[in-house]
Amino acid sequence: MGEKLKELNLDSDSIFVPKIISDILKEVSVIDDFSQKLSKLDFHVNAFEEELKKIDAFKRELPNCMHLLEDAIEKLKEEQLQLKGKEFRPVIEQFIPYKSDSDENGREKRSGDFSDKKNWMSSAQLWSTPVLYENNFDSRNQDFGLHLKSVCNFGNRGGAFVPFKKPTGEEMKETNGLVPVQGLSLSSPVCEMGSNDLSLKGKCGNGRVQQQQPRKQRRCWSPELHKRFVNALHQLGGAQAATPKQIRELMKVDGLTNDEVKSHLQKYRLHIQKLPSSSAGVSSSSWFTQEGYGDLSKAIVTHSGSPQGPLNHGGSTKGVSVNGGDSMEEDEDEKSESHSWKCRLQKQVEEHV
DNA sequence: CGCGCAATAT
DNA sequence: CATATTGCGC
Image 1: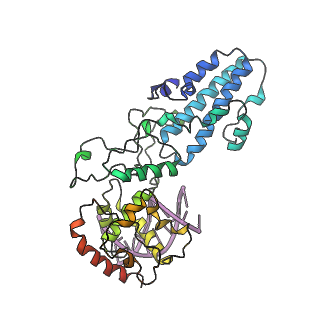
Image 2: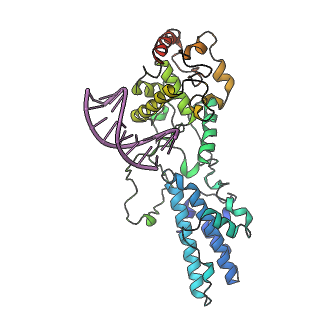
Image 3: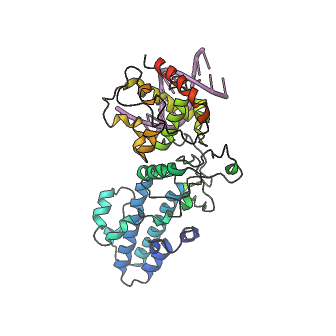
């Protein structure tokens, strides 16, 4: 098991290097005092478990993480048990309750001794291989990156857990110089574990690779994604006029399925008919305040000529515009836009009846 | 198939 | 409760 961990491209420069199991074990092995050994192990196990909890919500996305951590924990406990076995003294209180321990307990328990390590995983150099969003999405990438951070709590998880990227071939194809957008905030439902697909399925019992997906991985609609969605939607003449498939095509987000768009559209429609007014609280207006992300300037300014502002407020809609910032700049539809907005106007008026 | 809606799940 | 997925009729 230790090997598995080592196999990872966890370069030894990672800040918490010593935390990698083998190192930990090594570290522990040189300790003379028994209780110190145990305590050290104990601590590390706790640290791992805490991290395990942290990523629990993402276990489907980061099965590797889970396995890594689980393996690590197991290994450490194993070691611990061995130690205990050798030692005649019971040391019961050292035993670590497996999952029952809550974050706080664990934290409180151990926060004293090795203060810095509870974050070792959070600082996560483990996954710090450069996250490459290999699409040529200028500013938007940042939006996305930003979002990823905020949403997923992981500074960046490249390395073993790169968002996702198709093997090859397709990524080269361009449409009018615009690449369909590969890993834009879409962590592919299928977790791509490349070379790091270590075979630590031991934990899962059966040797069957966990490929079963009773339910699809939840598509996370990042602001960027939503922005694209809204843009496409508007280009198609409003929420009522646009159809999922068209939207999906316009969005040019690969990996995005019709169903997902359909679902999102459904929700979107509900929202625009539910709270068309600007009086909506800050919280609920998340749908319409996406632009607040990267660069407002770009989102707002955009086209001067187009009757954007008044457009969206078909009667009921007031201060808040439904548009998520029509920054349809480099999208190749600019030519047809002159006429598209007319169409849009029409459709939008139809809405908000 | 694709769309819309409703049920269901997280 | 909000949001995403699945199921079902059209």
